[in-house]
Image 1 (cartoon, one colour):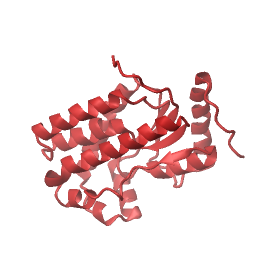
Image 2: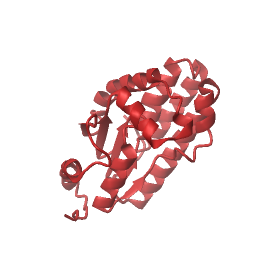
Image 3: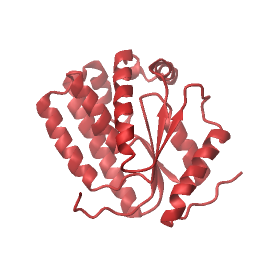
Image 4: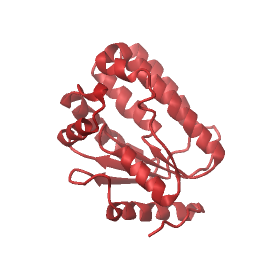
Length: 222
């Protein structure tokens, strides 16, 4: 049990593997619900290209950057006190990505232990999401979507890496249900950007979670 004061704030987090379409979901939900969206700082990360070229050399640096940026923004959003949508959670940094990089031998024991110690201290200070939306797709589909968006640094992502990440998600998401409500969405055959029928179901669930906590959300336009 944490002894830190955690601010009461309602936000929706969208999680899932590389290429599953989190940003598109976040953008559409934010627009429909009039909520600010915090996007993952992918392209600003100065370690991303070096990481994909040499994972072992840059894994620790990449993960520390993501962890610090996500903590910083979530702290700022907590201070503002307004509901928001988050593209990827801080939990995935430690429970999925750093763990898989450690298992693959890209991050040694010393770096991983130091990282996880810092990660746990940071998470202790943050409220969990009011709702977690877990987007799923097969590694084959993820590879196709990654190729379609055409980020040059992602061109060499191995299928084995995506499969290991997917396995880590399957392990982590059930444990996350102890922290917050989770909605799982299979995006395998979904067209992008996601349509209103899919989004309306998610929006209804967001209202269901927000209402008992006294959170006021603007009605969505139809």
